[in-house]
Amino acid sequence: MALRISLYVIAASLMGAHFFRIGNWMLVGLSLAMPLLFCYKNRWSLILLQSAAYLASATWLATALELLQFRQQVNRPWALGFTILASVALFTLLAGALLNARCMRERYRF
Image 1 (tube, rainbow, N blue to C red):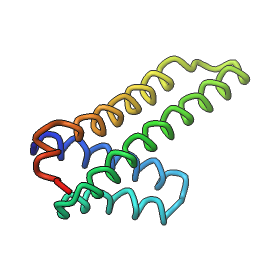
Image 2 (image 1 turned 90 degrees about the vertical axis):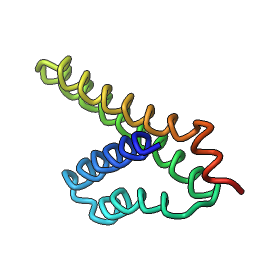
Image 3 (image 1 turned 90 degrees about the horizontal axis):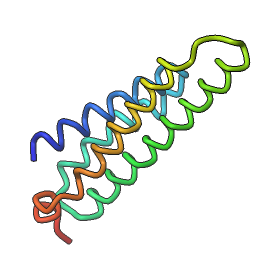
Image 4 (image 1 turned 180 degrees about the horizontal axis):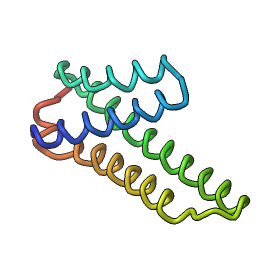
C-alpha cells in the first residue's frame, strides 16, 4: 500500500510542477495538497484522489497534443517531448488505477 501512495504522491508532485511552470499557483497548491486526503479513511477521499489522477492524466495528454501540434507547425522535432509527456500521463493514470486495489478499498471503507 505504501508503494501505491508513493506513486500517487510523485504523480501529484509532477502535476504541481506542471502548474508551477504555467504560473497557476492555486492549482499548484491543490496538486500538492491532494495527497493529504490519504489521511482521511473515508471512501469519498479515495474516489476524489482517483478522479484527480484521471483528470491529471487527461491534462498531460492535452498538453502532449498541444506540444505535438505546435512543434509540427514550426517544423521542429516533436517525438521526444510527446513521448515524455505521454509517459507521464500513463504514469499518472497508473497511479490512479492502483488506488482501486482491494487493499485500498478495504482500508477506505464507507
